[in-house]
Length: 405
Image (cartoon, rainbow, N blue to C red; front, side):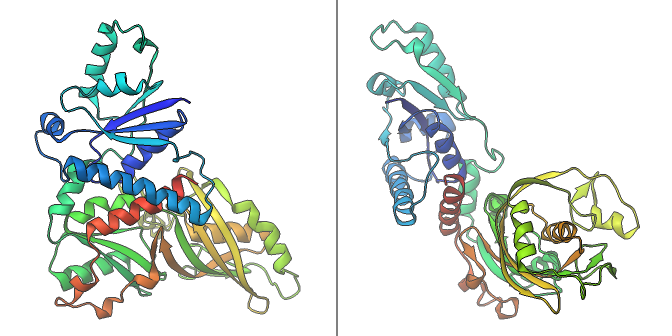
């Protein structure tokens, strides 16, 4: 049995912690998680943690148990096992005592553990404990993960902001994502509002908006898979890759036999990790300028390919007469469904544009939970507000499902 030890405050559990655990598990088959004592947190950070040490220990234990239930109930085939582990409190006076007690083969260090690292190096240098053979312990520095967001103090600010929270909005057609934010500012009288994952004006569906300090967490939603329902029309093309652009008919399909069999042969080519070229008509910025602004000037500039992943691509319906295909797509953040529609049309040699698009889910957040903008008023919006702790919990579970299966 190869023991791997990690240590930390583990205050407000967030995806950064889960990434740390996931990386550490790959280094051995038994994980020892050491939770720092309150007194040591104060010494290191100059402030008390949001949760006391017993609460932090219990929160971490409960989260591991919930991950186990996901595995059992869903029969998830984890790449890294989470069954063999021990969660313990560190020693109040000697944070390195656990090394003598547990004798791990590997010590995995997070990116922000400089104080622990210095003390550990000194312990190894001065060690005369031949029984332990501490010099042979492998020390691995784990890679950073969203370190600009995944800090306990950042989450603490969110939790301490009484106005902070999240609204799941069912975005109507012909509204930009920025229009939705503007409307929410008008309704709530809160200026600090942001959204996760832009939806094109003609698209509808789930738009997650953060209020107050919750805006600091918006980038975490990019870690989660997105689910879309899309309609693609064959036989035409447009400069925007969708129905809002300049459309031209490029293929008469009346005499061309395109059926479900041909479509189903093409779809597997788009599943998995791949490089996708962002369309010119997009909000992506190059040299500080949005691509669609350049496109409207008739300009085309070089764009870098971006790595995306399409987890599933399901044909749900095909209308032969109208040459319209209905799809359900589960993909990573940053995937342009318009580009996918265009590329499918290229593979079928028919051309294609995106006719309709609806985002139905982002991780564990579903459009069925969303509220219509027209329903919101200054007096009732707080009724629909999801509190940060509940959202962090859902983010963790959604990220764990996606990262560990």
